Image (cartoon, rainbow, N blue to C red):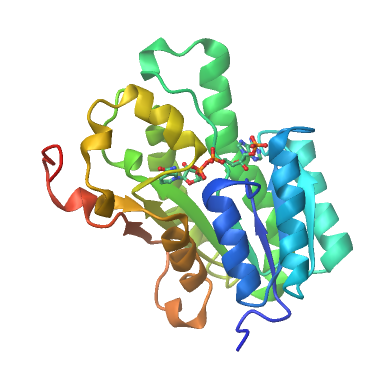
Length: 256
Ligand SMILES: NC(=O)c1ccc[n+]([C@@H]2O[C@H](COP(=O)([O-])OP(=O)(O)OC[C@H]3O[C@@H](n4cnc5c(N)ncnc54)[C@H](OP(=O)(O)O)[C@@H]3O)[C@@H](O)[C@H]2O)c1
């Protein structure tokens, strides 16, 4: 059973981490997948290449595009290549994110601009560029948010961008209703990816959290996939929390 056979998914920031898991999940479900990453020539590009090969070994089509979503021209290239190579787009997963780990008030102007340009403006560039394609397929957009959208962490200025994007998800789900494009989000708990390795340096006691409260990349990927399946047709403009229950308790003592 390949429910997404013949469909095309584009996952931003999918060379590694959660985006990589989402790309695999969509490919396993039958979709052809466009892989995107930012940094040219390094390990990220290498991992993107390996991922494309793995997806093709599953019998799906895949190609990778280096494009920094913070720029309008690179974003245009990302979607032009998708149309040229695959001729359609059914699912856009807005997963790419990049931010410094320090309090908002300590950000240099360059860091502040990069925070907004990558994590807010870049996502909106992607939505705008994807619209002509998604309109034709009554496509779906899924944004990957995090608990920083609703809980304070001193080293996580990205949280305010996630909160803004959760509003964008609600707003776009209404403004794109007539085009029959659905927009939803997955708000992930803590996932042990490369970015977590940096975050834990600024988060006292994080390692005392029991293992069962950490989320696996696949657990986020499965919900992103669900939001692109017919079973989610009643969900519109919502953000679904996937955090193993971490946010159910107001205070988590170390180890509890
Ligand atoms: N890790 C967590 O605990 C956690 C929890 C909840 C939600 N999330 C969210 O899940 C998403 C993925 O997180 P992650 O931990 O998997 O991140 P990650 O390991 O740091 O990977 C980030 C990916 O995004 C790409 N990327 C970064 N900036 C980009 C840009 N400007 N344009 C295009 N691609 C870009 C990176 O490519 P390069 O390697 O080329 O830079 C990489 O492929 C993010 O939205 C994050 O906020 C993470």
